[in-house]
Length: 248
Length: 248
DNA sequence: AAGTGGTCTAGACCACTCA
DNA sequence: GAGTGGTCTAGACCACTTG
Image 1 (tube, rainbow over the protein chains, first blue to last red):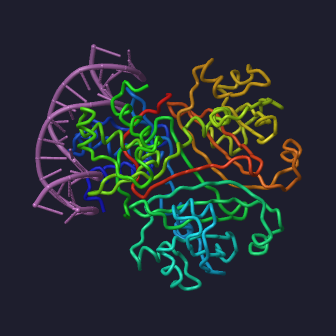
Image 2: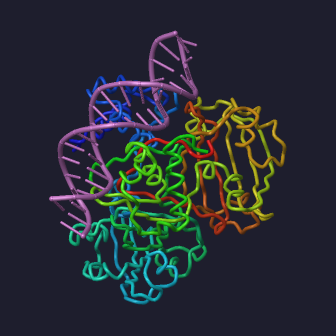
Image 3: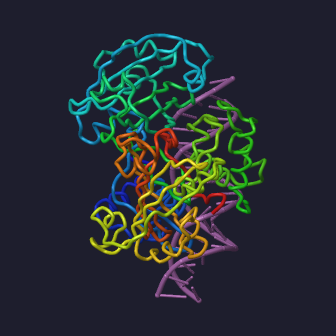
């Protein structure tokens, strides 16, 4: 937990907002108030409130007190990158099964996204994922060659590849980029999800990279309509100061 | 235009990245290098690189140089909140038409999202939007009562309500929250978009608020599959210092 | 061991908001 | 006009990466 000063302050403020001490629309104490109350410098306080602003919890305008915009918590990075972590976070039971794992040359798009030479070997995976027993997502992932052996070593019903990579191989996803659109179910999608061909699917394509920026995987995940909603919050005043997440 | 120091530095770095001076994977100069080169303090340089990190362009780890993660530009806030601004930004011709504008009591969800009393009056708008002449999006928006008159005064083929509100009424959107999912086209959707009922649609529901946090509108926008993709980038090391966007 | 980013301080001035 | 957030400086120490 936060031996880091501004993380402590941010956590306390977040708890106060969640707890209703500062309801939506309320004004937060001024930076100097907070600095005095926490015996910290103003810079440290600014880093704390910047954290909350980045989460979309509070807004600010020059000259006026900061205001509370929302009360709910947001998805964390790992929840957007890991189906299993997201599902467990919202209290669903998740199960998964590898339907195939084959090494083959990368397609043009895979090579581009993984930053490897066209035709370089990747591990192509097809996976069906269930929430509370219901099939909700078909995942087609290309893993970069340097993590292929690790993924091949995993059990067929492994719940979370990214967890396994982190725990057993020290491969941790740090950066992600996501493309979200809709499309009709193809015949394979339809068969696996128990839908009619042409049914609406929500697609999330994403690439994950480790902390050196090296791509790990490029994935095409297709969700049954109605099973998942993505949420994003933004602001014209864009985001604030570097921090570390609670878990790490 | 940056008379603001860290914005200048950020713009120069961004230009250097876009221009290929620092390709993907390259290491940026150290903070002290940049501080010396720009005759700025290290804090100012950190604010500049924090801006780029927030955009997902660069990553960082303690002890190692910052690295370039991507080269493309990202959507700005206004592009996510305004269909017209997004479309013009990517070089498409946009046209719009109000199909109906009626005042009626808010539904339960509208009242909640707009933070008004259940049953309070809102302006309900149905609008069809085209890209290069093709119908691509059906928009159903509830405007809060305090902006209703302004929206009613707009021309039937008004391209951008948010632009009009900002220009003529001083109502500027500052915060946004977005929910993205997929669903099958209803009969009205299908008729307006020229699709079959049940065709896949990408839905973006969003609420916009002004700088005091007061909700302006709650909207349900449905795009024909294949016409639009949303993109999000994220990082386990969450973002840094507050900045202002280039345009304002 | 040297370099680098992460955290923190204690000041300063300015632009803006609000009563 | 007092209060507040936005910007900036010039230091400091620490944790971590890298050669």
